[in-house]
Length: 300
Ligand code: ZN
Image (cartoon, rainbow, N blue to C red; front, side, top):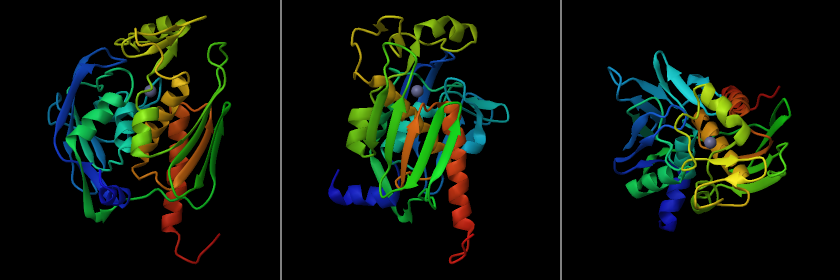
């Protein structure tokens, strides 16, 4: 991509040029599913469509449509639901895409390899195009926004780029405290974040399956942290700190539901997870909305 294209992409809304599809099974539901990315017009945002349901219902990828956050982020509108949207959304944000239609033939996107890389590659190969007449809608916060619950903490501050400082702490000898500092840049997202896969702990597997979750889970789309070793496919771990990278991947996907470009915030978090990500995203959205509504010159 040329410097001119890169500059345009940082300021103008972006979509893809061509339609592209991926197929596989859903991580939690285990259903066979096909996902199609389609270009979308300026100001339409990211939207899911259930093409297997009568009338092809549309579900906006926005905070107001989050219906569950158990081991993934699920969206719904009336009867139509889409489970585990965060990896797909993370890939779109990793590429700076603002407008995108995502068609699915079941209630979950394909898990692929458990990371965001297949989605990122598909979107990149579809080509990116900007709308020079439509500036990006940026998330702009007036100052610090914090959120804290049950040992998870979040802090956002205004910045001139999207930065994340994430710390993962688990009470498990194989997963010591891990920290990752990351600045969103297309190349860095592809290399540092997109390849990091979903993980779970071995002792959770039976429980997750009994709850109807992880039905499509296998070592081909997840890393399982055992009592004294990692269970992976032949590839092994992709990074020694793959787990904190995946947490950042998930956080980027969840924050995408704000529906605004994240290029002007820095986020620091300890022990982030889906339910808290969504609560924090709501607070960011509220702070930004309040700021936009406040007449210039008026302070509280
Ligand atoms: Zn994930």
